Amino acid sequence: MSGRTRIARVAGHAGPEQAHLATMVFGAAPPSPAPTDSYLRLHRVIRAACLEETRPGVFIFAAHRDVPTGRLWLAATEAPRAGTLGRHESVDLPIASEAALSLRHVLFVVRLVAGRVRFSAIDLETPGGLHTRGGAQRVTESERPTLLRTAGLSFFCVPTGPNSALPVDAFDARRLLEEPPRSRQPSLAELFLRRPGGGLTMCLGDQVLPLTVDAAMLERGVLIGQQERCDVLIPDRFVSRVHAVAVTIEGVPYLVDTGSTNGTWHHSAVQVKCWKLEDGDRFAVGRATVEWRSS
Image 1: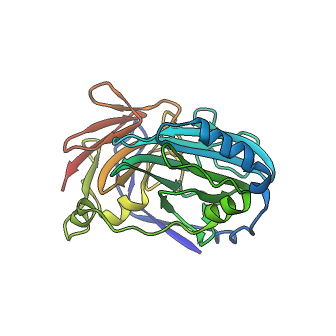
Image 2: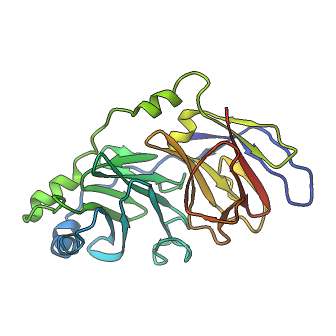
Image 3: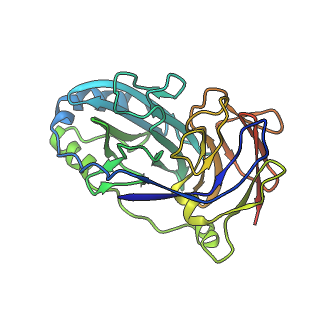
């Protein structure tokens, strides 16, 4: 069984706001899927698309068995870019045909680090989870081709740009994709956040006491939305089930909209997709206001 602690609950728009702690327990994660030969049949198409895209970035190819179901390319720059995959029509890569897929299932974040494309895949606390060959993973990070699976789908994540071509031989490419992602050393910023007292304090409206969000929470992602699986639960019909995620990227905290229906808005009236958090930033999430303050 897997457990989860809710760190805040915001009352409806008309009533007083309250905060409390609770624990949500979800069912056991499904077993890791068995290896499949579907990539071998898709290799030529995937490799050709990656060769055509010469800019730094990452391609995410989704397939059900041997049938392609969609693809998404995210450009890699020094400022992180994000894209969400799921069944909802407002996400960046919608796959409506897969009933086992959550409306907002996986958040992908891509950036350039020391000239190399690095991407993260974050499971949005879904029943189906997100799996590598090493098992279920909440957050997967890689700089090379990576195979992910969930809800009957395979995701072939392939960096693009100079020196990023897949091997010509399909079996060599498949072996490369199925290797577990390598671990990396934390950045200086991440080490700073892990010190005692590091992290952020999040305030919801004027009546809620500040809520401390530590580095471990930010590394896995703090979910904000209307559904019970979220850490910060806002029962407001203008808030999507999983509306946004607060997460550290290379040790720096960001607020990332996960393809919400009504958007996430900074107090400067700028719509947020992937926003680097600064002390005092305020955001409209439905009819609630989320404020971030340095701890």
